Length: 312
Image (cartoon, rainbow, N blue to C red; front, side, top):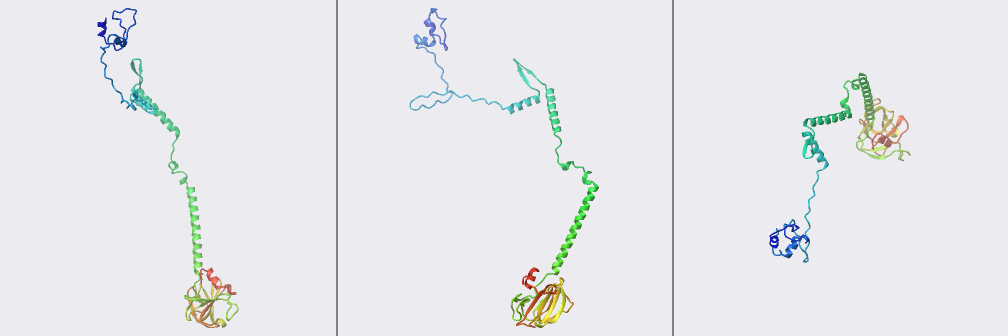
């Protein structure tokens, strides 16, 4: 029995029924057999494989090698599965495993019919949504836009508007001409103000005009459009010319040396009507100018010039 058992190499637990042993004895394991009589005849062990690098020992202690980790299997996403299913139906149908065999469920014709049904259902769904287009695309060329009554009404309104605009244009031109016609200008090109309205003077306790100092012989200009209504010598005023404007305002030009116009002459603003002098009650050559609205009493000439856009 010992010689027979020494020649055996058991990789697993094995009861020694083939040996001539007593049936009442407990079977021996491989380790028990080796310890008893086969201690010097152990089978050679295959070299161990390392699945991962062992952890480096620290402080003289051995660390157990952790078991290798298995990578998780990534499952396909739901959209991917659905896409594969659609491709399978389009290509020729789906198949399923039944027992040990594979049975075809659909054919290519059935898949095409299913695809056509889906397309028809989609078309019906789109048709129920209706047409969504621009309002301009649905206009009828022969509709309201070409209604003769509407066209006539629009043309009438346009004509009325054009007439109103023309009326306003003419009124604006008339006003501009009136302003231009009544525009005032300064009576002298070069001057200096020596006496103002209301000021106490040598010849009167209340000055009734505006004095422009200038050289004798300097031209005097009409301040606005008007008609000559008076010329000649007038006592303290000396040689005087009166021009009545279109609105009835009288402009007096006094102390002239010479007078170039006559009664009834039509003059324009800026036109020469005489020259500066020292006639009448004066202490030197200058132009005494008075403004008398409507031929009445005098007003401040300075203010009258300002109201007409001129600052003396």
